[in-house]
Amino acid sequence: MTEFIHLPGIGNSGEAHWQSRWELADPAIRRFAPASWEQPDLVDWIAALDRAVGAATTPPVLVAHSLACLLVAHWQKQMSAPVKGALLVAVPDPRSPAFPVEAAAFASVPEERLRFPSLIVASSNDPYASLRYVEARAGQWGSDLVNIGARGHINGGSNLGDWPEGRQILMEFDARI
Image 1 (cartoon, rainbow, N blue to C red):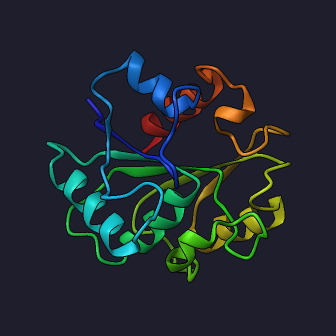
Image 2: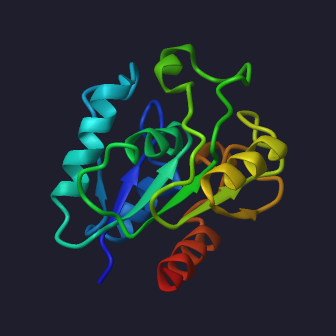
């Protein structure tokens, strides 16, 4: 059975966010735990992700949202334990005016192919990144890409509820890898 580790973005994922709702429905899903959700420190977030992956009994699937997608790209350059793959939802563009200044350390995004299978889920009207930017990232990282249409930042504000479409995308990705 696949282990899943949730990696929320800056500010963590609130009650209305699909990550939080999926965790309520499946207590086996774990969430990584950096020292600060509001003041993200790249070194700390990498260490927290490394600890979470290291605690897994089998190579897990990472389920990242927003800033955590950039975290995965940074972390994979020095990962010490294997992962099965990564679902990367709402990859942000550090050059976007909406990108949080608190996350500046994440902005120098690695461009090389990820060391494991990955799937990017994007929205055509995400205020944090254009679809063109996300398509370019998918090409660099060797990620498959699913465009789910105009769904904003694919977060709690997108009114996705339990986001069954996203859960289905994750299950199909997991079955493929």
